[in-house]
Image 1: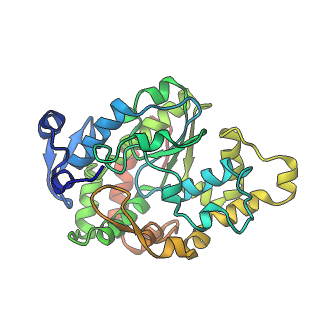
Image 2 (image 1 turned 180 degrees about the vertical axis):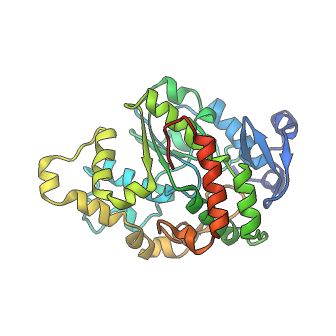
Length: 326
């Protein structure tokens, strides 16, 4: 379906569809006003898209849902899950593996993006089983049938200070019509005013449910995965019900998955270092924008000690008594 300029800028043209969003609390500061939709900050277009996904997305019991807050290693998780699940079809060491010629963002599509009032969800219906799908939605905003059907969910979180810095870099790169300084980004982030935020609510929702349903929701931490990727690749395979055999482990398949999906390898591939794609619905994004830096502790090069202490204090307070440490 071709998108009109009115739809891109303002959301769907149907007044009934946009009426609810137009009444939501609104706040300025980012590249466009955000609305507070069911406790989550979104652009009006994203809120409309989420409404469509909540009512029309049809999950399957064997769907695999990869969930992340933005800038928490989404692209890496997509690459790992795709490679692990489909390794019987695509030899990890082959010269024609899909990851060598297709961007990880395109191999594992989002549920709520590109905007679903423009790009029908039927695009997901043609995907073969088992589908691997992604979402940035907080658990509370996921289509309810995902839980009802028992779909497995892998959640990846990241140290909030690194998320903040990565978000700042990313927004200023992909939005040519917009620039926000680090200090303002920091203040917004501390207030919970960021896309799909607040980040602490996002993490807590999945964390608490993973304690209730550990067999259905796997809660992972980016820093831990970076420190021991082999351990976590095995963990992912077990959770996704495609464990590595003894023969595979002896043959070094686990190590090959780690190598193929590593940041440095993916970043160096022509498909990821050049070209662009429209994966949201309102602007093309350079493929390289997803591969800036995977460095743990990158925040130290950008935040002052005072800023770091302030954000750490906020996160500790928001997560108190939950058992979660970010």
